[in-house]
Amino acid sequence: MSSFKNKGKILVQTATQNHKGHPFGKILDFCPKRGKNNFLSENEINLYSFLKDAVPIIDAAITKIIRLVGSFSVETPNKFMQKEINDFLFNIKINSFGCGINDFIFSYLNQLLTYGTAIGEIVINPETNGIFGIYNASLRDVYLINNPKCIDVMICTKKSGKFIPVTHPELILISTLNPEPGQIYGNSIMKGLPYVSSILLNIFQSISNNWERVGNTRFAVTYKPPQDSFGTGFTQDRAAQIAQEWSRAMSSSFPSDFIAVGDINIKVIGADNQILDSQVPVRQLLEQIVSKLSIPPFLLGLSWSTTETMSEQQTDILTSELNSYRQILNPIIKKICNIYLNSKNVSSMKNIKIIWDYTSVKDKLRIAQAEILNSKIK
Image (cartoon, rainbow, N blue to C red; front, side, top):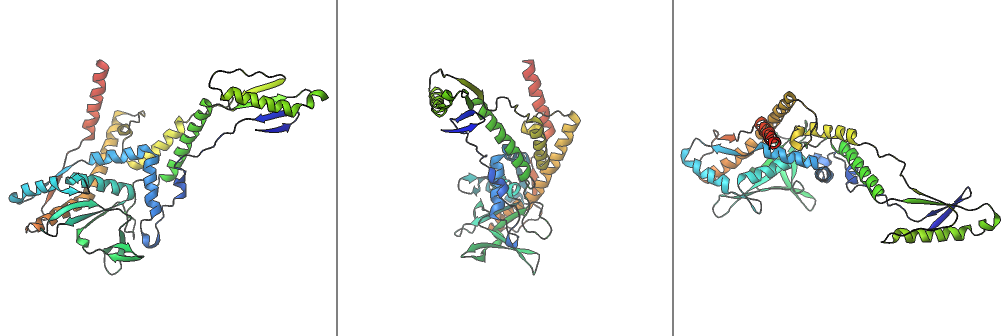
């Protein structure tokens, strides 16, 4: 409790407000610039991990893209190996608890979209010389170094401050997303979103603070002492008594009256301030995020006004994005299949065909519209 004298009035402060920043305020502290040797820095990895946690719509968009890419099947010209390779892709061990090539591809694509680079490794069983499993490697444990003598990449691990090339680089699976000229590592799909996301988080935190203030109000108790000399002599004592009684009344779990003598004015701090409308700025920021992720807003539950023709154009753009991601994944799938065929003493087949499941976003949109119409009829 403290008191301040100002123009004949005694202002008694009974509580202080706790100003808190949002829990992801460190996003602006991270710098996405590449470190020495153009390695994917720890700051960049943490930056994009924070973004997915801080802005749920980014995480939802990446998850939906992965689901929309869908699953696939492999066709080989060798009919005798078709059944074996199907069983292999369906039952292959993935990471610690996964099973099936789709688990690896989904995790691989998630890493590719999030960080711009995805790395996996094929594990060989030394007893049978066959494939034991596949796992998704952490970008923190692998370093890619450009070989100046040829168009090739050295894959290394780091021990005791030294880069050590891996023993079997032919078993490493690597994909990059939109790498810049002269760069080995790719670029995250979230590149360019940290600043926009930080503004969005500041708006959300301001809304949280405003509603916390409205729900847990703060009061300004102003006591104006009388002008006579008799009342002025007891100003400090009366101010202390008012503060004590006001604190008692506010801290009581039951309704309590506050009774005092003198000219006392009580106001709610900030009651006369109007809370800003956040709908327009939040939508503008979400539009920037959605446009960068190249996914139609209606797939994320955003009911923005749009026309049927515009929705169809958005779905066509998304379909082209999905096809580009599939083209990045095709060499990885073919490499896994060829290594498996080699372990079975079958020469690698260049004519392996990867057939992706047909995904029509338009059909899904029509189904959703039909369900809405049926619900309205019922």
